[in-house]
Image (cartoon, rainbow, N blue to C red):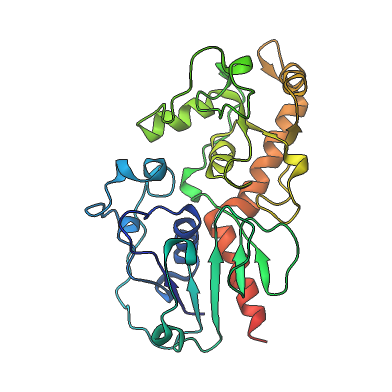
Length: 299
C-alpha cells in the first residue's frame, strides 16, 4: 500500500500530536510508501522554522529521534491520500493530489472536539458510532518505552501530575505546579519512572500524550473519571484504575503500595498496562490499525 500523507506546513502549529504520531507509525510500517506532503521538517530534526522549545510540549517524546527520510518522493501509484490534519488548522483539500488516490481520500481527526467534519475518517474523540468513522488515538514511539522496574520507587506520584487529576493542593501540596517542570526529556521520564503512580485525567479531550508517557515510564497509571469516558474514545479499553474522588484516590495509594513496596495487584496492573501499550498504544500499533481499515475499504 502506498499513501500520500498530507501534513500541516504552518510553522506556528507544527506539533499536533495526532498528526505527528501517526506519521511516525506509518513511516515505521510502510517506509518509503508513506510520503509526507509537504515534507514534515520537524520529523527529520529540522527545527529551523519551528524552534523545538516553542513547540507544544517542547517536542518531548514524539520528536526525540528523527524518522528516516525517504529518497523517492514521486507521487505515483498512490492507493490513498490521508489528510493528517483537518479544518481546524486551515488545511484544505488539494484536488490535484486527491485525484492521485486510486482507492480514496481519508481524514485523520485528532482534535479535542467530538464533531465530525469530514468522512471517511479516523477520529480520536469519537463518542458514538458513525458510518465511515473509525476510532484512533495517540501513540508513543517504541524506543521511548522504558524497562519495568518495581524497585527503587522514591515518590508516590510524578511531579508533573495535572492539578485536576490530584485535586489540586489536597494531593500536590501548597506549591503551585509549573506548566513545564522539566526542560530535559530524560529527567521528565525518570521522574515518572521513579513514581509508584502516574496520575492523569481528561484535559481538552479524553486522549492525551501524557497517558502514553506514563505507561512508557513504567509507573502505574491512575485515571480520574476513566469510567465515564465514552467507549470508542481513546484510549480504548485501557486497563487502569479509575477514581472519582480524593477518598478513592487515597484508597488506591494505600491498597496498591504497602510499606514502600508494590503489592501483587499493583504489579499485575502495571504488566497489563504494558501489554496494552505494546499491542495498542505505540505509534506503530496505531498505524497498523488504520492500515487494516484502509485495506478492508478496497474490497
